[in-house]
Image (cartoon, rainbow, N blue to C red; front, side, top):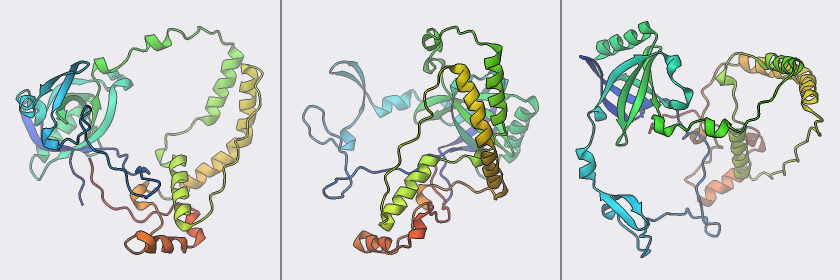
Length: 325
């Protein structure tokens, strides 16, 4: 199944227009997630929408939006009224200006999207807009409406396509001064800075996200696999402490000593990973031990009979297409 677009409309630069579709560039659906269940019955917990005063369940057609102005006072706003104030950018991403990418404060970045031509027409106009942005070495700033809200979006070329990043409005970004005002002005010696710089140089390398490992996700998968296989769950040993540090200079010196001991092993591990072909990191839906049958007691019995070796590592089946939303 092909991914589902979050938004479809038109990309426009002055009089140059092309139909486009917007797809999320990231996903959290692959992470392990849990449902709440009744410990006594094993049934999933269901949430109901109820009237806060009467406790009666309310149907969807009787639920409207309301803006709270007082303790028990709300201004009701209907769907028709919201549609009346809908913006032109509901169906069009209008490029308003071009700015240097370095001008965009990282605090304004929300999430990335892929913007692609929608259908077989408009590829030439799409290419003109993409290559114009690329040749100017700038970012195009436009507006797009998602879930009835207008967002600022920054567009930049990414290989043969365009990546759009939603940006926050100024009122959504807090000033750093109220947090940093109490930070003390500390004078550091050259020796301290030299030692710290030495540690940084030892840990410096290229940005290789394919080498990142989500250790907690791996531990969750391992736990679930073991429980499905009927294996005992061993208690985790208490972490070892490094002892008390006398002062900052001692901490820096100990850090350098530790780096000398750890660095070779870390380097070997990194080189070992680098030699393996890059794989897409699979998600929760493809991760666990396969169980035959439709479920219930039969599935649980077969799970307990599964070989213990199968739980040594998280088991993932081949990836399948998922909806983007």
